[in-house]
Structures are given as structure tokens and as C-alpha cells.
Length: 240
Image 1 (tube, rainbow, N blue to C red):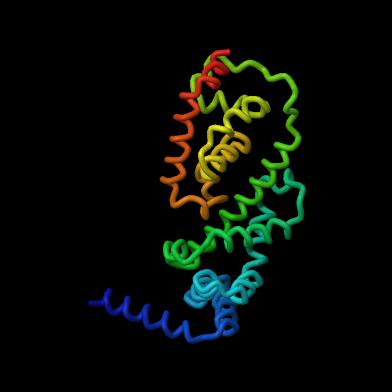
Image 2: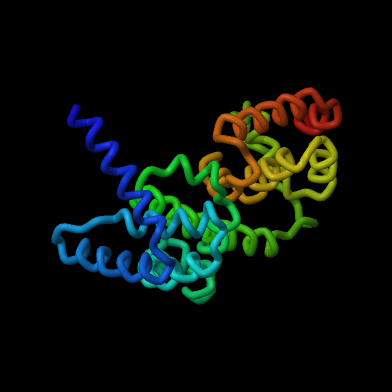
């Protein structure tokens, strides 16, 4: 009975918050956030509704207020990132990229998977990590000498994926492999896995708008690897 009453109360509060305009929501969100950092009783429902208004309703003004509310927090995540110095870019650049990534990747369906502000902010923090890593890996790729000699693989190279990843910077092999992809999803997995060296979770964080789920990404990668293993050109290359 108590649980039922609590659910009814949450629904009632949610409906009432939807009657507030964006400015009122943003002001209340800022006040409640300050209460959180002061370690006093606070209510995050205003901030959650502001996110909902921005993402589900695609309210750009609500998203602008979110940016101003959390800009300093996102900047602190950027400054603490281990690859910031390697990236060689300004903090504000990655702050803007992180917000852009979340805005483009999130829709009403994905938003329904987040149940509170803490989960939304963790996703935003993942976007920070994703844009910084993606940027540094892209810059590293530009400096690779694709025409230089390639050392032979070690004797214990038994994994096709690892062999391909080690040699993928060569133009001839890259073109062969790229021609085997059948759609955009496979192209993304190929590029991010073998050129950028990202883990599946990092690929998904960077491209969650392109894949239905992590299981979908794993399925795409598995199918692609199986096709690579069966290709006679690659088999001959790996034997050499």
C-alpha cells in the first residue's frame, strides 16, 4: 500500500512539474543542485523534468538552460581526463562536443531508460570521455606513416582480429577489409575497433544513436569478423 502511494505521489509531482515553464524549472534545478552540493535536503525532479523537456520534447531552450546549469561540472570532467593534454585542445571545445553528442544521441526512447538525474549525468560524463578519446585517436591516426615498413607479427598471433588490427594501417589491406563491410554499422565498428582501438563500450558511447543496444553492436562485430576470417585475400595475407 505504501509503495502504491509513493508511485502515485511521484506521478502527481511529475504532472505538476510539466505545468511549469522552462525558466521556472531551470531556476528550481539550480537551487536544488546548490542544495545537493551543500549536502542538505534536495529534490532532483526539477532537473529531471528539465532534461525531459529538452530531450523528449526537443526543446532547444531547455537544452540551453541545461548547458548553463552543468557547463562548469562538465568542464571539471574534461580537465580531469587523462588524455586532455594529449588532445591539445581547449577545455571549452570538449565541453561543447560532449553536450552536442548527448543532444544528437538521445531521443525519447533512450531517455525512458534513464530514471533519475544521476544516470543522465553519468551518460553525459561518458560523452566527455568519448569525444576526448575519439579526438585523440583521430589525431594519432593522421600521423601514422601508411607507406612505411611494417614489422612481422609475433609468433603467438593467433587471433584474426588482433592480426588484422596490427596490420590495418596499410592501404592495401585496409581497402580490402573496407570493401567487405555491408552497411554503416559495420563501417563504424571496423573503423573504431581497428583504427582507433576502442572497446565495444567506447564505440557504443560514441555511436549509441547508430546501434539499438550493446548486443546489437556485438552482433555486428561478430558477423564482420566471421566474414573477414572467410575472405581468401585476408587468409593469404595472414599466412604471409
